[in-house]
Image (tube, rainbow over all chains, first blue to last red; front, side, top):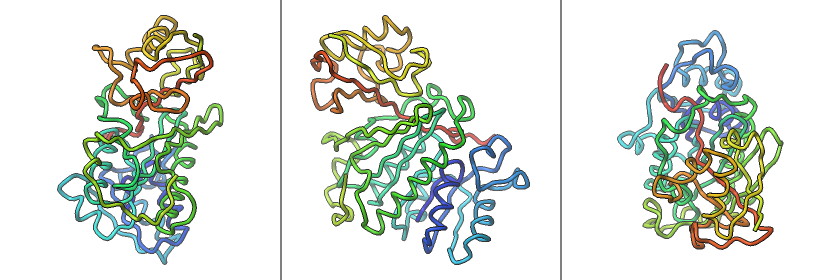
Length: 229
Length: 97
């Protein structure tokens, strides 16, 4: 499993995946641990301040789950290294922390035909969606292009309730497990949203956009045996 | 025609925190305009300067994406429910601090 981002969402997703017995985890993050991260990025501690997040995460996960092979890449995922980082991965968990990164990861997953579990959190709101390239709606089927990052506040600016990281991150891990096991009905063509203030869940129905600039040309279904939502 | 519009968390600062507000109009576009008259600043987060829905926002009427209906010209009737779904990401937007 590839977990891109070992911050808020990634801490939760990576821990749950390791605990579930995933044989191999590859963690990607270019960032270092900062104090403001600690309330929501639960793999990191005060003693890790200034340490690369992938190192901090690998150390904590390795100690708790020694049977899991953990690989790390202290780098920023981009079009140049995606082939290498995606290689051999059954599924990709989007635990990135920026809107541009999420759209990039979506595009890369489509290009490389990798199942993707998208997730996002801000203030008291979270959402997630699974993407099976060539089968279900991708992020660009939903949103044609990302907004100017300056128009969307980050968690650093607007804040986020820390528990949302666990709420959405653990669900991302659950989706990833179901993608590789074929069990259950995936959150494909369904955006699951969570309102932490009202403790309310909603599904938003999606469908593949036939004019989607990214996935409309993908004809070969991925894992067609998996039941989709 | 009064309808309920579900407001996503990131936009509730324009509605005084309300998660659902009423609006009137016979089309989705009219609803958006009415929302603006009641909650100033909201329309700009939904539509661009040309009046088109921004590419990182989606509008749904009774669970259907308006892009697969008639977009902002989609007819609205009494009792319909409109939802606004924005792209969110959170985090630090990739900036190393």
